Amino acid sequence: MNNLKTEIQSSLINFSSGALLNNSKSLLSILGYDSDRTIHLSPNNYKGFSEYFQIEQTSFVSEKAKVKEWQSIDIIFHLTEDDIKRSHSLLRQNSITIRS
Image: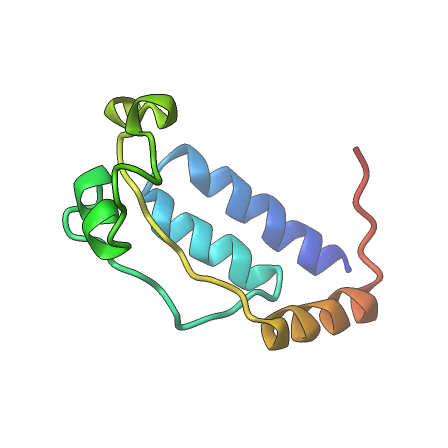
């Protein structure tokens, strides 16, 4: 348990520098969330996002979403029910307690 806690702390510290995408994937991997279903948007901004997901202006109000303020969009991966079941068993095995 102490090793896992140390890995999590180290991973969180890495967020102060380096690439957000890589740091996020690393932290989630330590927590047991692994997926190869990463989406690489090009460009990784609202234009790339809207083209990839074929967003129609009638269903998405870009002004309300403040897309002009978005710096980048990185979709790390998505989880399936099987991914969640695997992660749930990992958390149960390690008896991780999350405190607020």
